[in-house]
Image (cartoon, rainbow, N blue to C red; front, side, top):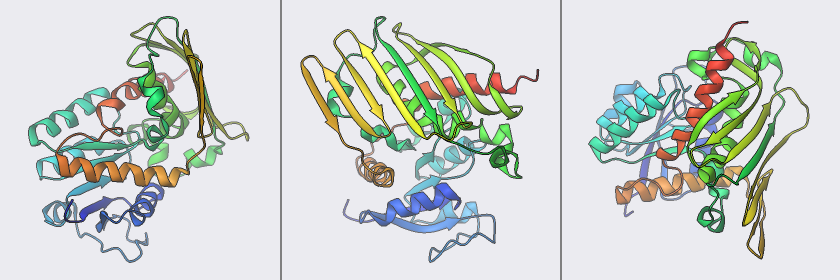
Amino acid sequence: MSTRLGVGLVGFGVAGRQHAAALERLPDAGIVSVLEEVSAVDTGDHRRAGSWRELLDDPDVGLVALCVPPGGRAQLAVEALEAGKAVLLEKPPAVSVEEIDGVADAARRTGLPVGVMLQHRMRLPTAALAATWSAPSVTAVLEVSRFRPSAHYRRAGWRSDPAAALGGISAHLGVHYLDLACQLLGRPESVRLTPPRKVAAGIDTRVTGVVTFLSGATLAFTVTAESMVRTERLQILGPDGGFNITDGTVMTQIGDTEQTWPTTPTAELRTEVYREMVEAVASGRPPARCHLEGARAVTEILSSVAAAAAVVV
């Protein structure tokens, strides 16, 4: 682009600060203003927008990054697109596939790109994406463990509200590797779950289940906030090879070729997502990796988890 892409950042909590740090490493884009409703939150040297309408009316803002809770995020995305702004959604991008459809429809109407901050997609090597994993003979196993005390979800705020949060550990940490599985295995046909453990209705702390994909491939998965062991692992086994990502390190065995890609810091991957968005805004095409359409599958899985976690026994 000949000019720097101006970003309007909505929300300056943990995710918003991560977005700001990602932009600091990218000369082609930068924050124009931050919209943060909590006056006590320090936005540093960034100019604060006075209102949502003011941010949308700012001609220097070309991209709106929505770092607010999932509930209500899709409507804000539609409003931003209709105001002529490209959109980057924090994960999970929406609380339902229907909401994704609504944002996608608005993107088509306006001709503006929408991306999702599912930065771990940037770890997928081209060789893995080009291989065939969507077949009935393919099986996969996923485990994500990141400890969170129950107080993390019980404290006041959106994390304790299922309508705003979409869920607990699965929606906010399991989402990344579940999304990676979907990038390779495709769309799910069914999701079968054991009864989730939860701190409250709709807020899960452990989820175990099996996903059957349209191709016939299967994924067995567990996501937990109840262990002090921290790990993220996805292994896919197919008739012609295998894929493994463990704590960010990728290994593939495709035919007779084995390759390993070392871990890239997650902060750098967020910058790569913004780099894609700069290119998408310049070209008018969806981003190559962090596109919204690719989040449809993981949203189907998370919606099934949310429904199971909402059941009061």
